[in-house]
Amino acid sequence: MSRAVLMLAPPAFARASMRSPVAFRCEATAHDLSGFREVLLATYRGRSPRLAARWLRAEAHYLAWLLSPDPGALFLRDAPLTTACPDVPRPDAELLAWADSDHAYEHALRSLAAGRAFVFTVTDYDARYSLRVYPLPTSRQAPPQAPVPARCPPHSPAGTGRHRRPRGRRTTR
Image (cartoon, rainbow, N blue to C red; front, side, top):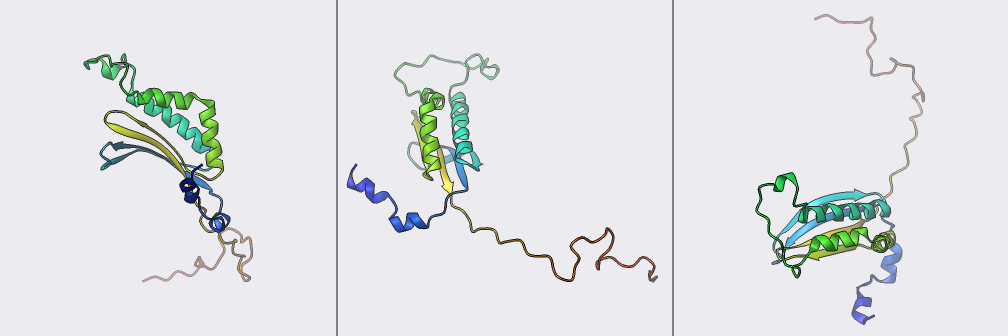
């Protein structure tokens, strides 16, 4: 491993002070190859590494279907279709291969469980498609529940309390 890669890791004191993530931000994006535009295709907030990895797998299947729909689909009935050359980029095939691989799924799951971000990117002639998941840091812990005030009984009977007016005293104007 090169020294430059080792420099990218946060210092030991920073790693020790980081809290474990409680959620994962999942995104599917499309970028034009010039790098000027990014389109957010889908988002999800997973509460565990396993849910985030499942979303990655399902979104890879869905994105592959969007990039290469079935030619017999109803919405393509009147569209002029041509057969592509075998040497053209096939991001849909790469997405399906990744989504169907148990090894790739386990690798993504281990990365997320370790608190690291995970990115899977495929490219064709027009765009670069990315599936990204990164941990969201834990916000500060919720304060403990405040105790019940001393002068109020813990369970008041229905219809009682200081907020209700007595029924017998109505003033007319």
